[in-house]
Image (tube, rainbow, N blue to C red; front, side, top):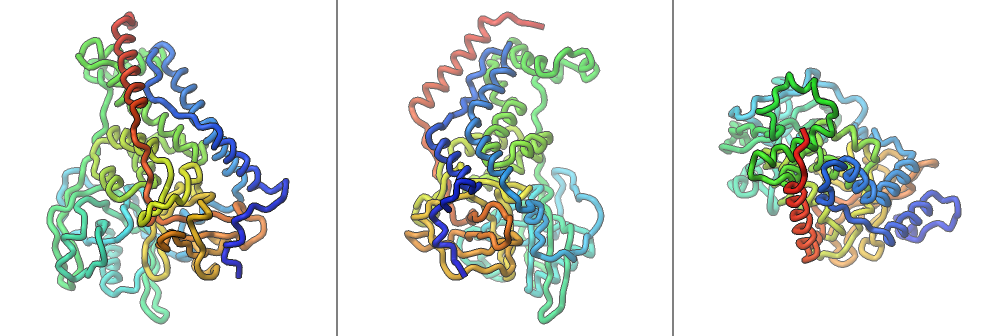
Length: 477
């Protein structure tokens, strides 16, 4: 069976859809536009300027993303439902569990996992043969309760040893089981599909009678910043507003007139402005028609972005620990703009470019997947890689493929031979793309662009222009 090494050269066919994408890639190399989030200082045309800035910034990236989405014939709902676990999982029933922020929950079962940082709203597939794990999940399902997912840091861990406190972080996400199946063929196996619900802080680590980990946790709040003038404009006045976008833009200048804070500071913390800039950036690797509806709920959108960002554990844990939605969105916007290439975590060899990221799932380019042995991988799908930086190892296999119809081949770094992920090759006629790569988040490292003197000078000029604009602009009520 072909292991994928001989597919590095493009097929010489004029009508090949992948050739169309390669032409777009060449154009993207020649045209790179940087979005500047402080160019819009004229409030009278703020909406128009913002839209034109976003349109110019994602012109090439969004066109490339749309072209890829149009060519994809694979059913992108299959990875989101984790169909490889089986179609006979039993629904647990009931709605989404929710606990009042600030509440203390005691004796919560803890599921420690390496290489995964679960975000609220993210799907978590699990599969286990371990008797303690099976017993724990049985109790959770019977009581319709939630369990705590905590990330393990460092090397191998003895779950019954004393090193757990040293290896486990103290911020995690409560998960709820939504579907499960327990089978007893040769060995008892349990398959679970869970969903992240709420963030928590670990207060105290304990152990159950059978030695399993549990703990006391405190539910973290989610702070949403309101309008700066909300205390001065009752809700009953909203029916008198003439234009929603115009009123929102004017409020920043009105607020700056009554406070020592300039209007550009209000703009930097305007959730709608940050959201539009994030949507523009994400449209370069995700279907633009699907990004906009996701942004309707800012809290859910902030966690969806955090789930799909190809960043390291430290930055992802930092995002998980932020209690303010606007602050989380601002950090995500900064990270996505600074990220350039994705490199091998072990030797820093460049593996792919940021523009190579695309989505094979309706949930986004990043997702959690579990293999038959129970190990969970957070995997990022990319359309192309640096072929001199990644090598295939072993034979292709369609067994337990996370993408039905595709065969997987193990991929390693060409320099240090560290495991990078898998190459997926189509084994059924009519599937597009013919091949793509899945990189494990634990194996890649984002190369961040260092801020330059030009960036600092541009920021200073934009801030000065905004201050002048506030000084000389007449107040319009």
